[in-house]
Amino acid sequence: MEGTKPVNKKLAAALSGGAVLVLALSGCGGDDNEKLDSWAKQVCDAVQPQAKKIESANASIQKETSDNSKPEDVQKTDAQAFQDMSDAYKAIGAAVTKAGAPDVENGEKKQQDAVKELNTISSSYASLKKQVDALDTKDQGKFADGLKDIATELDKLGKSGNDALRTLEEGEVGQAMARQTSCKAATAPATQS
Image 1: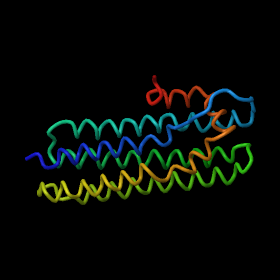
Image 2: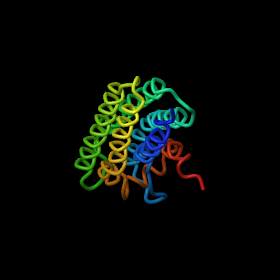
Image 3: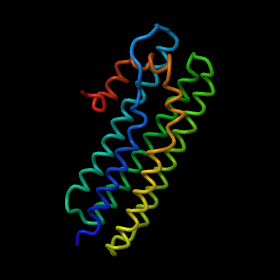
């Protein structure tokens, strides 16, 4: 029975939209600010492995949805991917906390808002993991319906919740981050032309 296949695709599509929010580091060039560059390097160095973890979790869901996968396999893969994403966003939040406030106007508020948002995203993925774990893999119809609900949640997660990150990364902070090799490496796959 192919009931879950279109839903899996929808899940993968929703996921790929939401998981790149941290990778949207922008800006290029600008004035050098040693303190800000140091802050950006610390954050970028910590973000890079987490961005790879998010990318890898995304890829595992994409792969599992492209085959004719059994519900048990989809459940196991999705649950692990959501756990990895939850851990990654939490780690990025911890890295931004550890780095302290960036040396810019309203830096402390921008930092706190971004950390709060990262922790909320982390909690959302942890909640999605619980939902996936609770799905009934014995009943194809119920499983497909459950995946549909999760895809809807993912879609919402992808559309909301990255305003504070964008705010943190705008202006001088974004320029400082763009100068960091580790931030360029973290965004390379998404920005190839």
